[in-house]
Amino acid sequence: MSEILVLVEQVEGEVKKVTLELLTLARSLGTPAAVWAGPGITAEAKSRLAEHGADKIYVASSGDIVDYVVAPKAELLAQLVAGKSPAAVLVAATAEGKEIAGRLAVKTDSGVITDAVGLGEGFVADQSIFGGGVNVRSKVSKGTPIFAVRPNSTAPVASTGAGAEEEVSVTLSDSAKAARIVERVKQEKGARPELTEAAIVVSGGRGVGSAENFSVIEGLADALGAAVGASRAATDAGWYPHQFQVGQTGKTVSPQLYIAAGISGAIQHRAGMQTAKTIVAINKDPEAPIFELADYGVVGDLHQVVPQLTEEVNKRK
Ligand SMILES: Cc1cc2nc3c(=O)[nH]c(=O)nc-3n(C[C@H](O)[C@H](O)[C@H](O)COP(=O)(O)OP(=O)(O)OC[C@H]3O[C@@H](n4cnc5c(N)ncnc54)[C@H](O)[C@@H]3O)c2cc1C
Image 1 (cartoon, rainbow, N blue to C red):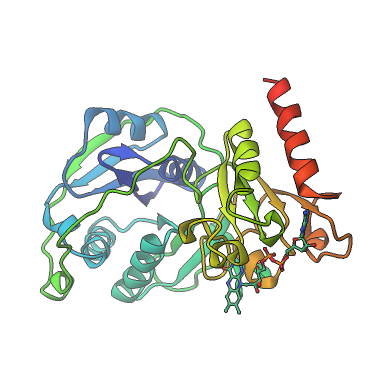
Image 2: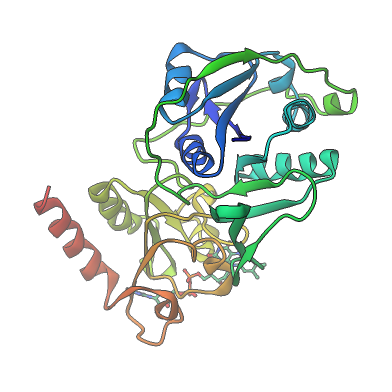
């Protein structure tokens, strides 16, 4: 079977969950080959990749790859596409992943599908387009198909692969070195899961009422082991930091469960969350548009409903 290249997302040597999801998807389509870009691969990372089906691990350990913004990773993948002729390339549909996918498509004269939420036989992708307003099934008709797949599109399933390591040396062009990273500032990470990767997201909107009241949303999130999100109305009001905004101009999430509390369901908010597998809306207005796309709806005051829900969840632990 042909190789499917999977670009590894990692932070300080720790493989991110989305990569395990991509390896799982790749297994159903061919032979997964992980691509590690940059220095710092650990024995633990290698076994994690192999345990999720990576038959090969291409390691491009040159520091140059991570010293410059985005372009080197696209060049590395383009080099591998030319040398290994994979059947497809999968990257995570993060901001960086989508940019890499686009650049790689230009370099290899191939078609690219971004924001895929599923990938099946014949490399047909389920794709969320027009800001999430329309779902289509798409297929690349030119070159090596490149897919940027949203986190949580599939559950990671372990399956042992050979994990054979192959060192790759990459020659970067001058243009790939046009923007150098001069400083990295580590963001303090709380105990909650990362918003775009979380299996459950609890979001609050204008209906939450104040920054202090967001503790109600956080309480439910913590009971469920979820990430906290917010509508733009809530972030613009300064009630919750902008990095947690979900929507067209915020983060795109695709969790198993999305709970929207005090959020009306504006099209720009939907764009960031409507591919969630199950959507629960809590809103005091029965006519709120969010109920049109919710799988379950509770008409009521979130300040009463959410604490009761939190209590029930905690009782069952
Ligand atoms: C170019 C552009 C980009 C945008 N990008 C984004 C984006 O990325 N993300 C985003 O979210 N928005 C975005 N917006 C804004 C978007 O149009 C909406 O204004 C915003 O989503 C509204 O947020 P909300 O639902 O929290 O507030 P509202 O629309 O004001 O809704 C509040 C809801 O809370 C309910 N409510 C009030 N009190 C309670 C209570 N006690 N209990 C239960 N329910 C209650 C109300 O019934 C209402 O339905 C964008 C807009 C533009 C023009």
